[in-house]
Length: 136
Image (cartoon, rainbow, N blue to C red; front, side, top):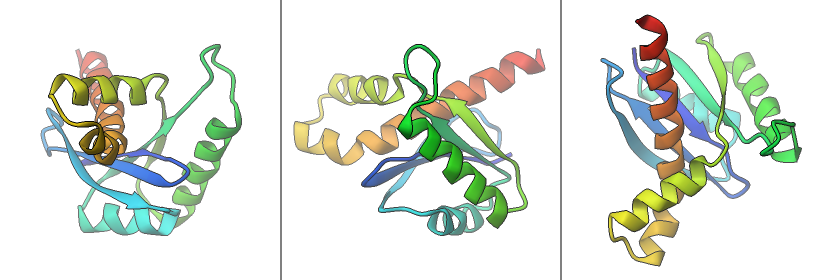
């Protein structure tokens, strides 16, 4: 199944898609000022069967303003698509994505361009790992 991960940001939204065998997460182009309709278009173009929206909970697990916005965004998506839309705890995904980009030796400018997609990859990889673990 192809799964689309969404790292919702205030200015940019990172996207990642799984391979059909759910073994790898690949970056898609970042969307600027994305809304539910633009993410729905990407989902349709990529023929995905599920959307995973990152849920940026506070470190203590509570829902802050950004997590509430992600919940609202997921609900908007649910009204536009027939596929499942799932929220996934994404605490520290941005930090992990940026660390990966630093380890890859990317310049600050290149890291800034790719950080949203890197966070979406981290979200999707964690989600896929969870699915594999449950399947055992």
